[in-house]
Amino acid sequence: MDIDISSVLAPAAALIVGYIGIEVTRRLSLSPLRTVPGPFLAKLTSAHESYYLITGRSGLYLHELHKKHGSPNSVSIIDPDSLKKVYSEPGYRKSTLFRMFDNPVPSVFSTCDPDVHRRKRRTMAPSLNTASILRSEDLIWNSGPSALVSKLGQLAKEGSPVNICKLFHCMTLDVIFDLAFNRQMKLIEKDDHEIFWRIKRGHLYRVFKVCFPIFYRWEPRWLTSWGSDSAKYVDDLCTKAVQDARKRTPEQQRNDLIGSLIHAVDPDTGVGMGDEELVSETFTVLIGGSDTVSASMTWVVELVESHPLVKQRLLAEIDAVYPDPTTRPRIADKSRLPYLEAVVLEMWRIMSIVPSGMYRVVPEGGRTLCGHFLPAGTMINPCVYGSHRSAQFWPRAEEFVPERWLEPGAEANKQKLMQFGLGPRTCFGRSLAQSEIFLTIAAVYRNFEFTLVDGRPQAYHELFLAPKNSILRARVYRRQDNGTVDAQTCVTAK
Ligand code: HEM
Image (tube, rainbow, N blue to C red):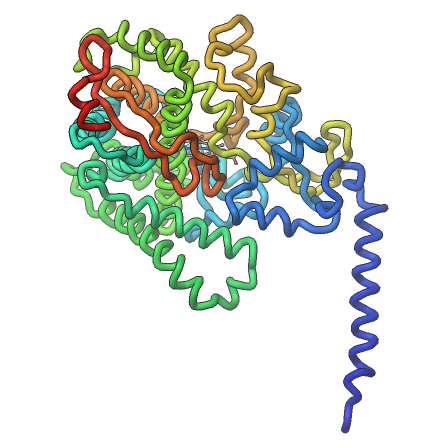
């Protein structure tokens, strides 16, 4: 039978055009989100969100939109009180987008099920709480800041510019491998940056597939060769960490994260974690516990070196507390260095490491936020970067002013900082992150200072907010005991 193609195509085209017409009308005139301010295109499609996610500009783009206006299924908010509600009210679940972090099964970070989350969190959190970090202080010091100070000493003698970002990546990976998996990688000593790149590429590969789900069914060869090797490399590292921990003899047992996870049981069911679950949790800790901390320290150096008065005050405080540069900083010294704490808080305010993307879904019945009714199922993308930089909530919002954290009222302002999230899903690595950053910045600035080689870098939001291509080049100078820069190092370095 002969079929006249045009007789089929014409009704099909009419159907498609009709469907698009109805959908556009619905979104523009009937959707409850039509009154939420934003670009016209965002009322029709979320394609632009995927574009900014892939190109590493998501959080920064939302900040610009909030400056201008204040997507069909997606809404971004910056108001601290509304953000608190979204993060803290149990009804707002994490979006299924977090499945990109299921590796291979949901982890404490990626699960959208509040009951599963509660069980996992109860099991894992004690290994990284403040008491446990204090017990591990020597380990953190030896594998992290102490090794970094030795490396910087060598680099200061050599005099060539170094990538500060890379040094911090190596350091934080060394700490997390040692602390969580009992593996001494010595990446700083070896100057080995490969794991960092594999983690990053493997993650981008997953993001790409989430944005274009068709690649789950059919993956082009270029995508496989670009990303899947890296994803597999990181998976193998985590699998090996679990296998090694399972094989430990009683004498080799250590109170590290993986050791406690293997022995942890659910208090309600008495059941422990299976291997797949353990691999997924080790993967989460590796990703969440390394680049976040290294990006924070990189921004501290970048901001301090770009603000001479801040630098002067910071060095003076550190020198006063540690007159002898070889003194090892201790976590307990934190309260004696309030300006250092102010610098770190201000860095987190202005360069929120997780600027956006912690998606939540509006619960049954819908909710009213910022004066707009949002129906159940609406996706909310909290824009922490925009909230931290909004002139509505902060004076001199776009400037780096650590002094604000030493003024009266600073305690109340800390409630508006959301760099670790809030509520039941708040970061449980925060104690480790704060201690690691404190020990490192105190030790590094007591002994060294830097000059940025290429000026100030552009910020990119790939996995976390970091300088473009993870590069911050600087020259390193050893400071003398009296706080001045070592003239000899300076001469060779320049
Ligand atoms: C400066 C460093 C860090 C920053 C800025 C940071 C940021 C965050 C944020 C914003 C969340 C909340 C995500 C959400 O609400 O959806 C989070 C959760 C989490 N972080 Fe961190 N993090 C840091 C360091 C760490 C470290 C060192 C570890 C582990 C060793 C870690 C492990 C986790 C885990 C497991 C979760 C999931 C918690 C849950 O859902 O119960 N993070 N982090």
